[in-house]
Image 1 (tube, one colour):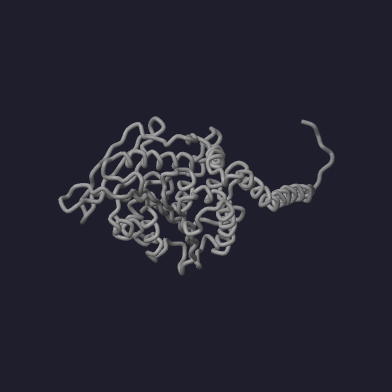
Image 2 (cartoon, helix red, strand yellow; image 1 turned 120 degrees about the vertical axis):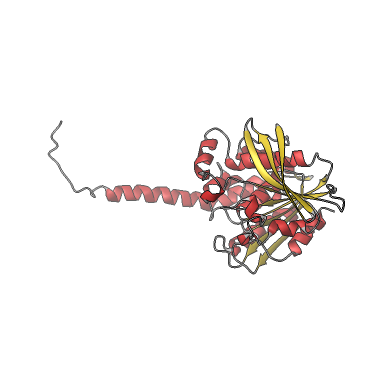
Length: 350
């Protein structure tokens, strides 16, 4: 081995390494500062003499999310299985499995409304989405409580609709099953041209395809609501699936340049589709955004500033202003307790 005669302290090159790190950090901040103008330029290209070209924007949105979603197709399950659980009041509780992408058993719970004779009643369908650490059982109160979901699924069923609560890959408590490493699986999907968001949207859309084909679901009256990550998936479903006639997204909509979580940011995301641009794809259908004034995860002021961007685009496109709402409620990171939003969600379905 060569005998080096010069020796130095291990920290001698630290200032150069630190400068390199600072340079990259500054470079990122400079690009983030410029990204707002780039997003503006990108969304404006969809505005034409005849209005806002939602379908062209939606095509590019699909491309950003990656597989397995394919623009222009509503995913369908290869097989559907129903496992009746119980009858509770006017509802039958059914565990559902939708086989997607060859052999993925996408899971959820259906709360099927019954008439006075115990038969399934023809009614609208509302998707009720849990958030991080959650399950459809938790947000539906099947454990005896619903934590910060504030009985979201139960409150939906009080309107006499069918409710479907799907499982997203967010649970962390081992009592719910093997703990998933969502971020790791998302990375692996991404280097294969897919994403966890795209996969779970595919599952929800396949479930909607299956459920909207049964005689007791009114396929023209489908809505969606959710908390936290469920609020994110509500926003993404409203953008991706035009069968959602109304959406109520709680405690997630915000400025992604501040809350740049890995699984809800995508390649070139900040230059193309922030939350406002994604939300615009819900139009001309109805969209309601809610956030708590004491939310521990998302500062309501960032949500408000993002909403004003969305509102400007919505107005510029000529969409009905009454179909868009923003509510700052008194609360923490939780589902809104006021039923006014659910009243609007149901009313939007006609």
